[in-house]
Length: 327
Image (cartoon, rainbow, N blue to C red; front, top):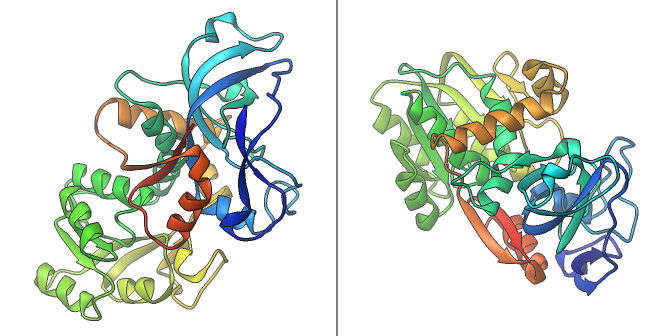
């Protein structure tokens, strides 16, 4: 099969398109003919050697990156229900990579059948980005009195948060960089789409709100944008933090405000989801929202062979929606 391999940590150019041996499913596993593989900003960090996974160590090399796949089950290992064969499925591979490839192996227990009406790329967007959105939204009680500010509103998470907030009746302010992205945010349903590269963007938000203040900021960016967004909050407002792309991938930051900011990634999100398998709970919620037509992910597609270009575009904030590789 053809796959993307990483032999040395470093820049996107280290991702190479190669011929490699087909993986074989073991007991309890299936092999999926991949039709779409999700690309995440975390993938770029792991590519550079940032520690991750249960052991919090750099990924062993060489490796095939990618932790989100959708495709068709084409081979079964021992002890797998034969009913999976030929099914359209989507799965998050967990801490075991291998998604940037024509074939990927995963446990049958990780599979979800793709609902009718969703294509492979959209399903990948919901299994990873969508489940994160479901986790984030657990911390916001949105309704008609809410005023939600969404930095990076043209991104994979931001696009879905804007839709969900509008469905709840909230007033939504979406922030994005440049006229192309702000146009997409506006088309996606935001009441106001503002270019955060404009130094006066906070003033434009205040003028639009006409004396109202923000009740919640959904922040995956950090940095100066987050600091100015937090200043828009009124008494009792909440700053829900789920990432730091504007300041690199690191915890904390000077934009966090005591009593206002709440970091909701990882264990905090999963504890709120509850149940015996909170990750799967969030995945099921995300797929159900998409299947019902309440959430529609934005997707930017790249050929599998152009994984390096996809990484560069993502790191340079040159993408709109969820980035997906297609073999």
